[in-house]
Figure: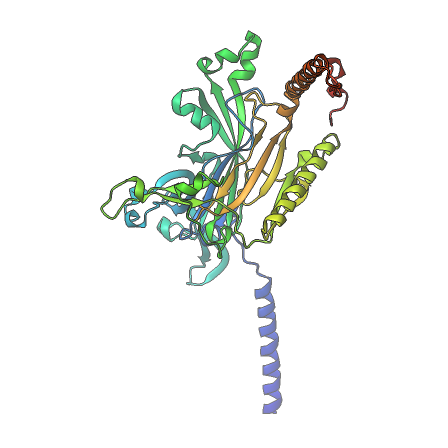
Length: 440
């Protein structure tokens, strides 16, 4: 009997346990809604160095102080959380003076709110299965943050066109700024910002031909791309820096990375100058280059084919020179010019008021001189704008050659020497109609 009673009691206990356990499983943990909240440790490595590159990616064709695709000077930066901001600061290049925090140069600041969460107490010292925000911790102890990207401020002055223009004249005033895109990854942060400017009449007066042009010239928008990439994942681990002395610079045409560290007695003089050669890592096998979406348009097919042919010629030259790597040209896609990790050839179809037809900057590691990525900006709209000038130059050269040949033939005829074959003169009315085919 006792054994049977024990079995019944045990069975009942198990049933109660299962019921209680089942009920406990049904009680979902109610989290606080966390819109755009990011964990600090997963988002930004405050101990790591980042390569920072600003770019002007889009601008109006009518403003001569802008240049789409232009790239600023890359810098090594570190991130830092403060009570109210996430700061990106350019690091001190000389480790002897890194202890002075004011040697860090401000680059970008982003307003933030520090947050943390925990399970709310049910009054008996137990978790109530309901999450609550923590308000009794210091900001530095909180694990999460929420960024106000629209409040982001660019604090540095870089070498982008408008910033350079404003160094010497107060030409453009920034009226507003808004973030149009942002992407945070494990090793990179990319932010695209649209800025609105108002130009001064002192700077645009010479380019205005009619009062009706003032509205278009005075106020305009520009898209900027601010790219941060963790240096440890961006730079090659097997790259060896190459010193590039002044004597070699007169023979070889490399770009260079130059610093002037202070001597042991803290003097700034020419002999302490350090110059490194900018080059791709020679151990690389393939350097992928992206093509922007403009290359995929049917009307630009001829330009696409010519670009492929040109890259093929470059690869043949690399092979002939003994280089180990080749350029891999990828299919046209919607890729951003400003992402520092991407090498690319980008076509700009709008004719530019500045008259630029081509531009080829590179992102280099300020520590070693290694080229990390590069871009070629092809201003197709401006090239078309000046085709007639190139044709006129060609015609003038051909006609001059024909005239010289005719004079030489007349001189030979007068001297009794047999006549040489004359060069056919190029007639101006033989110019093809370039407007009949946009792909010409």
